[in-house]
Length: 171
Image (tube, rainbow, N blue to C red; front, side, top):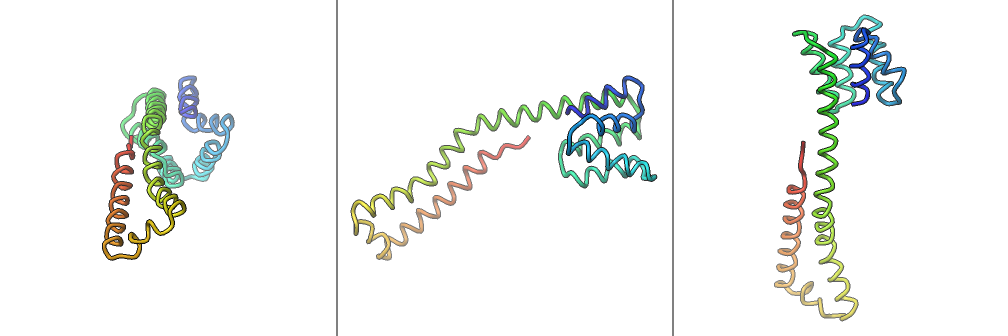
């Protein structure tokens, strides 16, 4: 987001797209400066802007970079105010990041509950076995006990999958 704002400011002040990328390379910290440096190196040896940005997207495998590259490619083919496009994209990236943090906070209780529910049955089984030796023997030595234990393990695995699915919110 900060790199996009820096590029947009550079474009508004009259710099070209390539020069705005140089500003980001010179002013930002790694890894973004290194990636923009690679794009500039490719542009300097004659690779087209579209292909250099595509290589950036292939290297980074990030939804944010994909969004930026797509916006730049659309602007290059259709035209428009690139500085405004980059500002809008930066705002969208910041908002997505904020939402991810908010979702992480809202699902923290669910993740903690899931962890407790996963750990509790084996711990209680070990505790009962230590406090009262032989009490759990029918569970492990009879056919009915093994069936019940298998059913409980299956139900736990199913519960884990359901909880993971419920907590996996994507933006």
